[in-house]
Length: 150
Image (cartoon, one colour):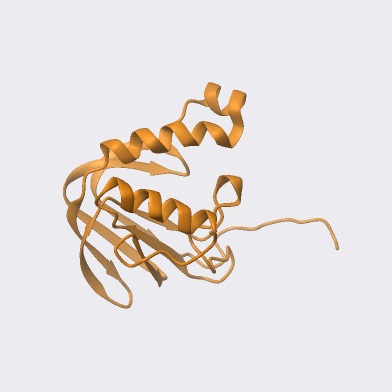
């Protein structure tokens, strides 16, 4: 995680040191991902679920993700060695598809992730209570967005 103070001072660069710390501390767990399409048993370092694909500094983690397509996009992070993380980062910066041993992607309207124990969780970059299960679903029409006329 990155402190608000560090983010304010350094902008997106604050995430670099946080990312390096996270990669060094990353541990893979066996888990299960259940979607409206399939059930997968995975060994993963983490799972990112979203409907917008671009992160800070223009890094595209979830290619093809659209806020209004009614689908959740899931990135299952599977790098197990430091060099795999470096390779994944390089692929993402170059906007090239990661190798399967680095990351796997899924699309679904309903996603349930189960771990064997409660693990740290974040929502939009903010730490929330650890959990062994997370359920995310699309609720079409649940959000009204106002935009200026074109």
